[in-house]
Length: 120
Image 1 (spheres, rainbow, N blue to C red):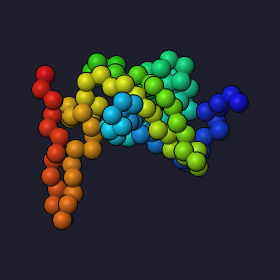
Image 2: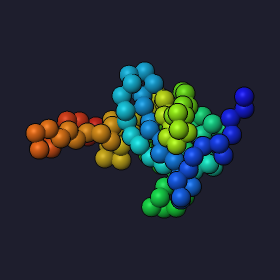
Image 3: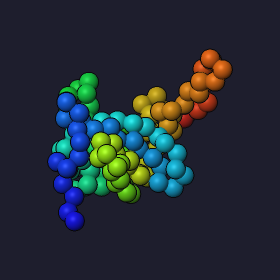
């Protein structure tokens, strides 16, 4: 069966959440938004492309930073309203220069940063 990006369930803004996961380690690296064009470009090129809500434009992950995401596997959840992108990540995934955007742990009412920024 051929995949059609229009078969996904997008929100009112035409977006769908996409979770980027390291294909080798299973670590969750980031969450961003995609529209149908970003989905199609990602599948066509193998370079993960997202939709920037702040810039209102497509952005290829790593285009300016060099921290590229190469698509390994594209998964759709059971409701077709969320994506899981299993990727190979070059460099940090987070714009704060950390491996993962999920670097803050909340425990017993307190926050603790558990991933330091990468040097470089």
